[in-house]
Every structure is written in C-alpha cells, then in structure tokens.
Amino acid sequence: MIKQAIIPLAGQGTRLLPLTSVLPKEFLLINGKPAIEYILDECITTGIKEIILIISNKKKFIKKYF
Image 1 (cartoon, rainbow, N blue to C red):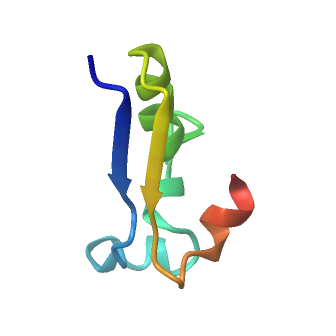
Image 2 (cartoon, rainbow, N blue to C red):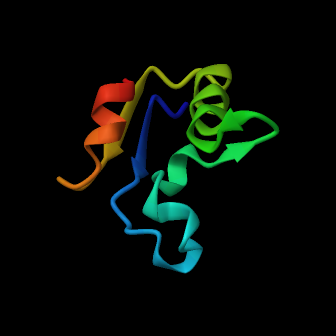
C-alpha cells in the first residue's frame, strides 16, 4: 500500500503565461476549485497519509495557503 505522495510544484509555469504571472499554475481554477485541491483530495481518498509538496522559494503563496 502506498502511504506517501511526493508532488513537485516548483516549476515556473512559463507555458501558461500570462495566466501564471498572477497566480501559480497549481491554483488555476478548474470548475471553480484550485487544481491542487483535486490532487490532494485524490491522495486523501486513496488512503495516503503523508503528502510532501516540493516548492521553490518563489512560491510563497503555496506556503500561505496551507
């Protein structure tokens, strides 16, 4: 059974410019909900107990959110 998930979130999102100049790509809305929420919900429903988010120093928004 998988107990741990490692999610890399450190990219700059240059392929999604100009959208990512304001908001990190992980927080772009899909049906009114941030994309990262879908990923985390899926991890939780499958029984993963430990989730590690790998972020860059520039993405302070993610730290504030969680």
